[in-house]
Length: 234
Image 1 (spheres, rainbow, N blue to C red):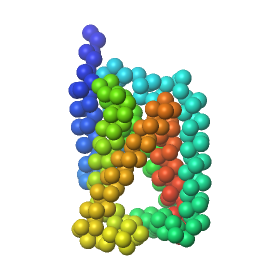
Image 2 (image 1 turned 180 degrees about the vertical axis):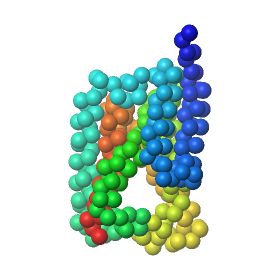
Image 3 (image 1 turned 90 degrees about the vertical axis):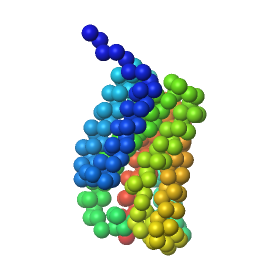
Image 4 (image 1 turned 180 degrees about the horizontal axis):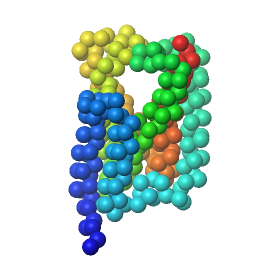
């Protein structure tokens, strides 16, 4: 007997519930398992989409958009690299690359961050979740613009826990907002708003290119190249 198709509203509820659990696992309960969590949760989310009648194209991995996705990916990585190079060369912006979370890491540890932790632990999960599954399900019920906004709001909220100590981890932010509770709250709210706006851009890239490869490439470049440049500027 075939399995009944999961209604889209029920699929949305299931996806949000899975993401709440994943966020708590990553930031409170099982931080050392983040890579395993990312792979497992990504698989669950894709399974939910397919159970709700989705396919590879709706997820953003359709064969007909693969070439365009690769082109977008290469171009976006090049743009981020150029921007970071300019930022590293200008004294005013050079301090933005300092991060106490990575200042103590060795070269191999930075390489692991850039080539494994970021693409698997961050990009894979977040892009499949917010620009893949959530965006696809929301587009069935709303316009592409509304789907992008709703997905991006959830993406911003996803960053509440990871950004709680950002004012201490980033010396530049700490010097502006201080290291008090009020400063932490202000920085956390700013991080949520910034990531929500970034989510809108990533959704636009997903919609414009037709491929999840475009937002994945930009997301990876911003994070991974940031680690690399910060390491080189020590």
